[in-house]
Image 1 (cartoon, helix red, strand yellow):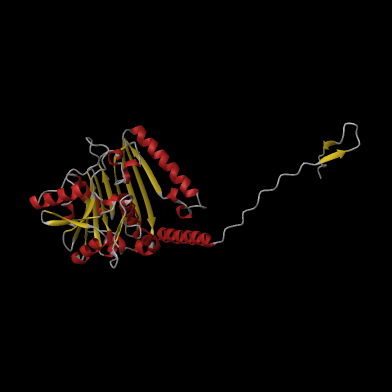
Image 2 (cartoon, rainbow, N blue to C red):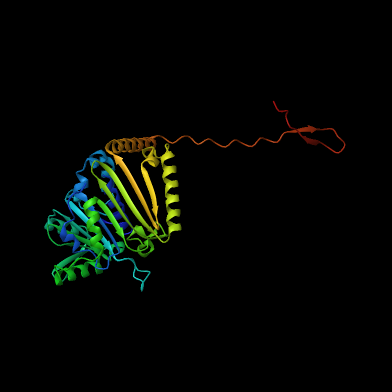
Length: 357
């Protein structure tokens, strides 16, 4: 059965995107996917799934990769979807100022090597209902959480996922202007797409995207935007550029981040995989921008993978261990007295406290 849980749907998509980057890409994103970027996009994420999946780091982080795959927001029985996905592009225009309580629109374009007929049948068997729109069919989950979401199987190379309004707009736009130039945010994204295997661009304050669909919204309240890229080649490279509201805010963010990294690198008991992390990170403030750079070579990746596997094995072992018996609380000492009888007023009791040994 097709499972699609909408409560964590985009949280999982983004968590999936970040995790994918932990487990290479010289080629640019399929030009066809740029057509489906929301025309007013303020947030854009790209992932070269195929390159990352076959990278050396993915081999080293095989266990972590499998854990990420199982967290995908949709599961198609009989098809390991992650194996046929090549690239993913996620875009959103952010929150509508006129309707701030509405979830920000979201559009996910996926390229790969799909079997359209089989994919459509699986969507139907999973309970999705087909809805005709122009020349395409939108498959809509019927659970309460997924009622505003849908899937469009365009062809054997392209799958669209998103809220129904964004899907309809994208279909109309492509049918009306198939060769239309993509929005301006794509120009910056192209550069990142060449240099990194996972990248993200945000052109507005994170609060503009806050909501269930986009977890970026509540990360840092003092930002006006950011760019980030992760490359998986001879090792693992992270580059992040945060655009703060002011230079003092940038210095504060850098200080907090440096402190966090220092604490993480010293927490050998709970997170031994981050040992020595503070020696790998470079932090620099330039006006209102904060630059972070982190580099792991192949030996570092191997060590981290081994440490993570060992930690998982310890947790599993502890989970199997029988619970320790709960000791009964000690009973309160009984009151001791000396009873004297034969007195005129009757028996009398005097509290007695035995001498300390």
